[in-house]
Length: 116
Image (cartoon, rainbow, N blue to C red; front, side):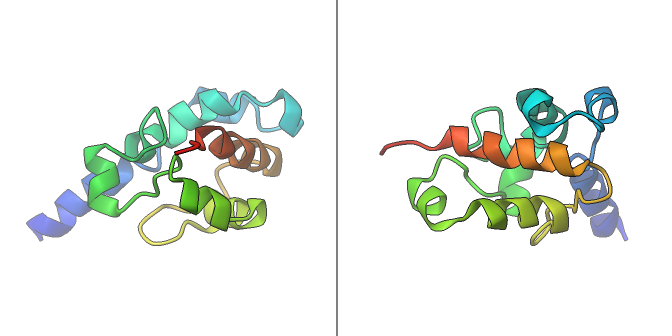
């Protein structure tokens, strides 16, 4: 019982949606502040730099977006689907973010790509 409560508490940090999410729901993708959305909804697990070097990220096995191999082997469509459906322990955002917000976030995830 205690373990499930701790797990719920940890996962709840990954599902937060803030005022920016609501404010931009009707914006076209090119007007969405994807960096701000990432800060509100993704940083807890993926970290500010996208490398998933956070306690939540470690605990849930969050993807390191700076990983060149992952960046090269993952399509934009797969990123969009991951945001919508929430693979593994990641929550699904299909009912929390608008299609344009999801599209903007998918493009933003590409900015973490490294050349190493």
